[in-house]
Length: 184
Image (cartoon, rainbow, N blue to C red; front, side, top):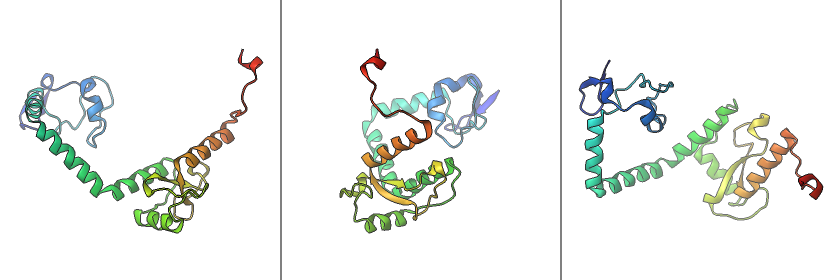
C-alpha cells in the first residue's frame, strides 16, 4: 500500500512510515486523526512524514537549539494572542459535553469580573483575574445554562468545594470521618 509523505510528497511503502502505536500520542491530538485501531495507519495520512524525513528533521532540530526556542516562542506568542478564542472554545466544549447550548464570550466574562470587583462570588476574597475561575451557580450537570446569568467568578478553592459537595449530593458519599472501629 503506497502512502504519500507530507514532507517530501513521495509515495512510499507503508513500512516507510511509523506505525500507529509509535505515533498514536502525537497523532491523536491532530484534527486529521481518524484512525482508531492499533496497527492501522490513519485514513488521512497525507500530513504524516516518512521515517527518513522525520529523522532528518529531528537531526536538524537537535543541531540548532535556536530553532526549538524560536518554535516555542511562536507557539507561546500565538497562544497569548489568541487566548480569548481558546478560552471560549474550552468553555463551549465543556458546555457541549453536558448538552447545554450557550456561550459566555471573553468580553462578557470581563464584564462579570468587573461587576464582582475581581472578588470570588462565594468567599468575597479579592484575587488577581488569573486566579479566578468560571463557576456555574446551577451546575451544567444539573441542567444549568451556560450564559452570563448563571456564571460567577470563584476562586479555585471555592470551586473545588462546590464540586465536592455536588459529588456528595449525587453519589451519597459519606463525608463523616470513620471511627477507629470502622477503619480496622
